[in-house]
Image 1: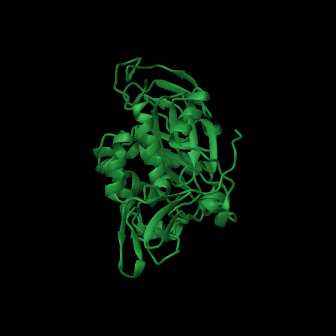
Image 2 (image 1 turned 120 degrees about the vertical axis):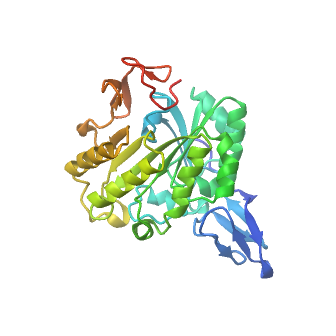
Image 3 (image 1 turned 30 degrees about the horizontal axis):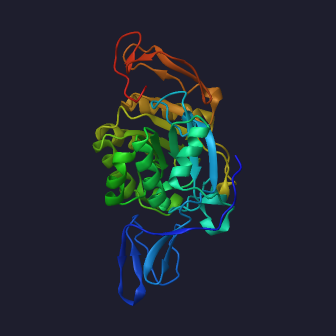
Length: 344
């Protein structure tokens, strides 16, 4: 996909507090960065200019693609549908395992960019015969204003909008975005705060809050948990996370265990052993989670959807390809059990 390059744009940022001495506090994410003039936030994407906070790169995504929706991953949201994916440089976490670090740990000013207004994004999606938009690859919340404008116009036009996020966002901006979101995949790295801080530089509680808000707001939610060898793949940690999900009403929320591959600052580690992935799936199912998947390893056949009541396969997948889908009106074709999700 080829579009003209452009110079970076700026837009006055939402969610800011002006402080004495021309300083400003960003209120978008839990870091609450306090920035002196001309300083940039931890996300690389927000700057204090003359005592006001601006977002860098509004209208200048660094990556555009048409993907299978299963790649997000979303397995219970419009299976087999294509989705227009986009990202802007920057992220508010510093994950040691980041697979997109070249763009997530950069500023919008550092990368080759496109020049697209929100209206042009939707026009481009239409030209590719796609009616779903995904904000993905990096952390969408750091280009919140762009996401919000696109998502609002998209809903007016009948598009579906998807957020693939680390969940590290404050309550107010998330609540104001929710009416324009159709589905979200949240990266829940683990259920222990000390490990969260070690792995990502962020705290666990804001992510927990995001999960609860999305559920309460009725946004379709799926969760991804990357099993990093020696860090998040320990059985007691997996047990603890699964028990917390069930105890807090997420037993119907699809859980994707994702296989780790060496990347960024953890390139010295080996890939997640396949037996660990299988054990994690079994532990989650034993804990009471009804829809558990294994990602990044198609050889394990962990991508199919089974009815929790009659145990028949209702969605057959191979990689990102849906081979068969017999969910009818949100119910199992064989026994009539409700299969949570957005199926049409």
